[in-house]
Length: 415
Length: 160
Image 1 (cartoon, rainbow over the protein chains, first blue to last red):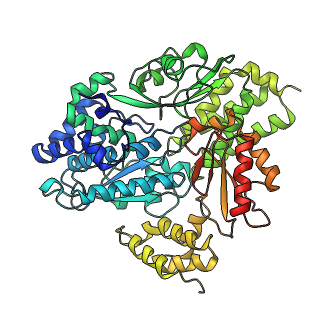
Image 2: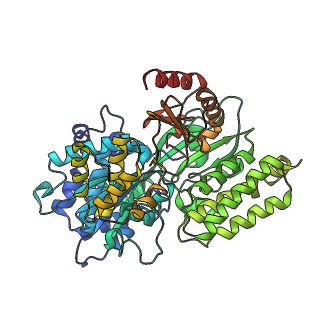
Image 3: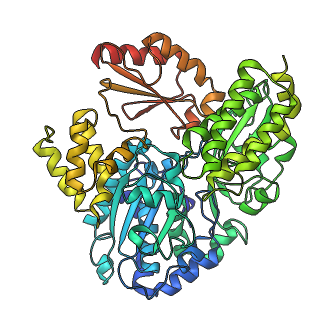
């Protein structure tokens, strides 16, 4: 097997074009699935591969597909979450740039497995230029008979619509994405019912991240056992780990799930630049609670990060160098969540803006330990009291920054 | 109602409507077509979109006041989006932003008096391995320095 054929980010010239994708044996997995396998067998294979969602929540994709009722009358939908907004995350961008056909092939396999014929790809507005490349790939695939009616000469067909967002982080939350697609403010829905039964246009709906879907063809091409062997038994495959901040070689690295965080930072990304050292690491996008330098000997998989009190999230690793005032990091974090709270749940709407006001006051006028306790109380007031995970995503990183850098913060605000 | 889209925009709007089983679902793409043509969404355009989608005007207003990409007043010929989230902040985004504010003599959300540039701040443009980064009319730049930003601004002022 040629490694470039199973890379999420291939490095051959013009890798995004259909011709190049076919040279890498593209669309062979979907052809095999559609012409020789039952939909149930496709879902079973993906379940067996234990591919955990690459968007942030880490839910196994096959299990999610299995929740869609098989005998439901009327349409069902696939929504592709390309609303990559988690700060420090830039991996789905590269799939759209370098391997859009892998995404389309994964969508085709998902659609066949679940039994749906229409897919919407929700792309964040900031990626409008990349959406144009995706639209090109869709046109190529349609012209080649890989999308549209009667794919591979079977009775199965799939239509794909690209839908551009308009600037709102919350639309990456799956039910907010559905609200946005339906033409309303992106405000999350109460669950249950879950989208698998009542989703887009009230129909059963699967929502998957770009990277998750782009990895699906590998599973059908080489088998669930091979895929699990590429990662961990309970968290299969390779993942795209983004590294930014204070490293010599920032970028996206495709590595087995379970690769140690330290190896990613020091070996692949080259470690801190000359004369600098690592002060803290955010392991999975801004919502992931910060880790200290002595906490980075940890395998990068969903369960290990959760056990350490943080999360793998979107696998966007941000390396914070020595000398960075953590009050500034706290401020950037507080400002982001206050700006992006959708306003639906009171604890989050009021809590995030109160946290920001307090941090602004501490920066301007200083304060004392009681103010830091106040911030912790505000964060705890949000946790568990919101419809969607945004509340946890806002509260947990604030908490971690205060608990782990309390001494520095107390000094920074003392006048 | 004094707003009427051009025949080309109207054709794109018709195509867009055909992609969704419910008309309201087309509201973001329809507003994007209107804004691409007019530069902003006027009150008349809001009413036109509401009528076209057969919804109350408030349905359009609630969209415009929620999503950050829509404009209800004219902006500059170019839009400069400066990222200030974590990876860019670590790479000196605040300094870049201060430099741009100084250079353009405007703040975020404002447009230069000659109508060349509207400056806005962004919360993560997803280009973190190129921090600090910014977007000019949707095109990514990064990592930027004071020098490269100065050149971009000169370009926008001369040819924008």
